[in-house]
Amino acid sequence: MTSPSSRPAAARLQALGWLLLLATGLVAPFLAYPTFLMKVLCFALFASAFNLLLGYAGLLSFGHAAFFGGAAYICAVLSKDFGLDPALAVLAGGGFAALLGLGMGALAIRRSGIYMTMITLALAQLVFFFAVKLPFTGGEDGLQGVPRGQLFGLIDLADNQAMYYFVFAVVVAGFWLIHRTIHSPYGQVLKAIRENEPRAISLGYDVARYKLLAFVLSAALSGVAGSLKALVFQLASLTDVHWHMSGEVVLMTLLGGLGTLLGPAVGALTIVSLQNELADKVGPWVTVIMGAIFVVCVMAFRRGLVGELLARLGKPRATPPAGGGGH
Image (tube, rainbow, N blue to C red; front, side, top):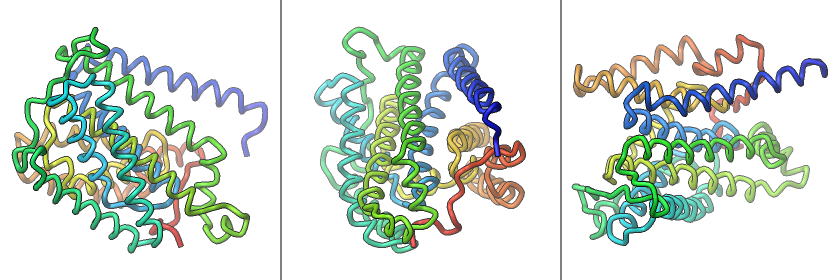
């Protein structure tokens, strides 16, 4: 166990680490291509939101593309057809995803394990069907030419650096919310439910309510990530709502480290970087190469990249039981 005298030092070290990450984020657009960085940030928030549900609540959803892509469409429509302020459009996308998460979660948490997972996949496929058929979504062409707009009527987000700092600020706020959630009494109850749901029920906790709130929080943050992506690339497409996107976020989370705060972000950086570097060189083979890399990492680093590092440093992490998703 950590001695009381070492706890302040550990807290200071952790605070210093967060400050270094924040400083790196602030100078990053001067060192790398801002659009690439914005894509990484969007997927980092998406993967972290998914990790909140699987890594800390033990609920495996295979329908998170519905929140990510659905919110992207809502944000794109509000920006393109109604000229809504970018910040309000992102919030509206997140709000839509939260409501969608409330409905999907209320149905999904009635079952557990693989049954819950398949319910989320089936419901997400319904959202994909609506994205194809509804008249305002653009069908297979998607919504193109989405304007970034002017933030609060003052800052022109057509400038890549201005857009980067807007995305960075929103993602930092999202990470802060996730950090506060998992370190709150509510987060501790979530971990208790993940570890031993019958015991949590015997202690008097309303397990269904805690699970549903986790589902809604995860969906809302996923929606914010999807809304940001729609503004960054000025496009909302079927790719965002396809089940492949749900599989991709699972891959990012497991690769980086399930149940770790920074693991999903590292996984997102790894996957997006691989896609960016390999897409022009190997074409469709990029998915095969990524699959092979994932298999190697799972066999060599079962805890994920960040999880393995924390284990070697002797620090605790949240590890859900195998086949998480309830009992």
